[in-house]
Length: 187
Picture 1 (cartoon, helix red, strand yellow):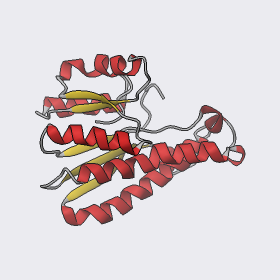
Picture 2: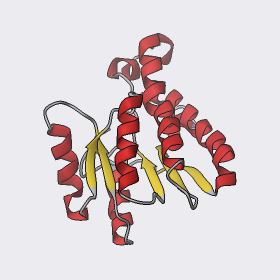
Picture 3: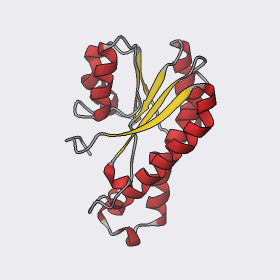
Picture 4: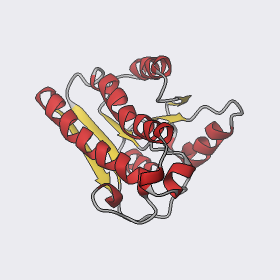
């Protein structure tokens, strides 16, 4: 499960349900050099007896390769949950027409391409088919005031889901996006 931020994360809720149904889980955390993010994730999911909690910057191919190599040693992969999104705050707060090129590219890389990159690596570990799930929001389908750059990213993410489903369906790998609705999270 990629992207647990704290106890209120949608990814934490998903992890608890999966664990209750017998899943053995591994987790990522954003590397920060201080251990703060590791501790935050650990506090959120420690009662789930994780196989591992590893740092992962999804915008770095070497880190993706290392993370999925670690995952491969844990056994067969049946599913992956991608709960990762980011855009610079100044590019969310401003009108979309005023967003920076740098902010746009960072939002798309972190929020959309990271799902494609992790899906490719996860699919290679799903020898018997599986499931890839990412999280979206209504703001990717309709304009939601104040969501701005993240709305663009979620729209692109939802379309990436469709193309990945097309690519991976023949390998018996389902690809879906969940839009949980308004939930009080860190975001």
